[in-house]
Length: 519
Image (cartoon, rainbow, N blue to C red):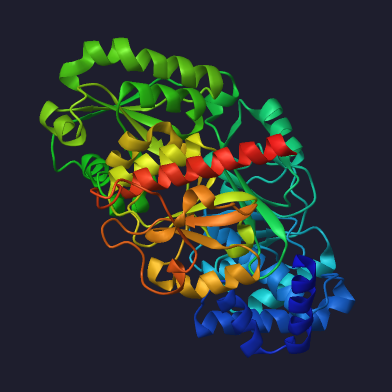
């Protein structure tokens, strides 16, 4: 049934796929990538040049207009979006061919310095024409294959070529700056490449991001893999010592940044969060050492900090990725501002993975949880329950608190780092999405006191579970049509939203076990 719907969708696209600027714009907007008119104009000029020169220069084997836009242009731009539009600069595009992904990335991130590496003379000629026609600045075309003779240091490398990840890491080891990023646009089957890269180059690079996604409005799955180049001393096997930063003033810029991590805006801007509590910190150090970047403590707690956490931090990080931490030694009054739970011990500073853009085709088998909870403790609690019962994907609606807030992490523990977060719409807009999801056989099952008794419900193999807002519940309308209730004593008005969600997930998990026994 799903295949029939997909083929019908493709047929409708073929009928509409008359190459035009307006249709190109429509495809971008339907993919959640609204650009400026000037950027659409650049893509249109680029496409016309690609079409005109393709036969002569052998630029691409894809001829259908819709496919070219989705697989070449949109897929390239999605890489920038998945990285929060923050590209390293200068960024070297290895094996760029017709300028992919480098040209689309330059269009949407014009301030990024791009180096296009291409060894075939005809394609280099085409790239020069594109740069002139689109009036692109800060673009260098390197008319050779990348080898040790490439002398310029760059902050980033990106490639969607067929060469394996280990081969590319070997090729770029002399040109990527310490702290620079190697970005790979790969298909879904690259686990062995990643394992081999970590085995061979674990002392030189470490994996910092692995982002699966689907090109919107297609069935084509992709993975964005990002490695970070370690310091040259690490590559030679020299252990990194602690970088000590002593902070005694509230006007210190570093302290101001650390203080912003107590609120959602600061976490989003810096891509960092603070973790408190011995148990949580030890779990994060053990299972997620690659995200640990610093430790915060008070100068007056030196003895306690050194004996309890710092030894563990040194041991874990030096033995796994060889990368030390920056130690922020704060005046006691400043430390107390960050120690919101009064632990009187070290606080761990971590990098936070970016939220993925949620798409209905990304829904996997089993339960996908949508959360609108505005209370960070409720949010953390339900994340812990979801992870405990095997839910991997969580869609955070616009109303939801940030899962990396201190209270969220305190309530959710290391489970906050064990699930995939997706950025979803507002709960108010879910009625329209619900219809599209139902057409694809993916129901949104909500929780409501007026719903059907959950004990008599048979869960589908693939569905979305949606609790309502704390207090307000669900918006009226279609979201209430397929809802479940958890029976409680009449004298009790309702359950806590996080508790009700945990019970519903538990019931689903138990139902899965029962079905497995029947089979």
